[in-house]
Length: 185
Image (tube, rainbow, N blue to C red):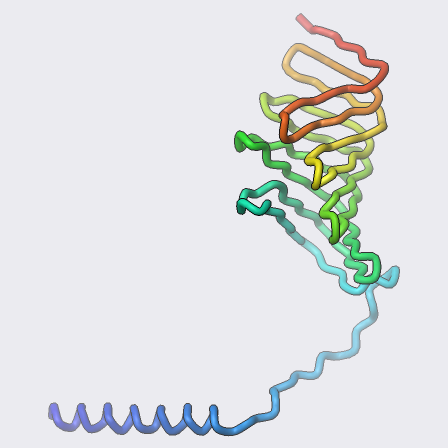
């Protein structure tokens, strides 16, 4: 019985070697499935997808930001991705995060800069809430800027101003003009 098992195993190995050897030896034509003709995405986009996620890590392999969107349209010639229903998570050096979301946005493929517009809302560390109409994230400088009206709320304080700079590296927020602060008791 043992000899029969060994003989069958030997025959199976020989067959496998012959099949693999002939497959490697022959140059076969690639197997191509014809995709039915589809309409190009609207607005001359090269690609359109739903439920997307992008991420960016620095040269030390540390995650700097993550982006999620309900819909993305890629424009190859412009090196641009246009996004809808977007959420951006910016990672600080101390592992805390800034979460910002809005209706529309763009990701520049070359610079990795992100713009978001339309009812922008955000959650910062210590349960700080932020609301504005748009922002630009400059990836090289690691700053978030806006020239729009900004409202920041946290526990008992309410701040508003026009224009803002968030420095991710220095973990600092500056309101630029017309700043008003109110303390609730």
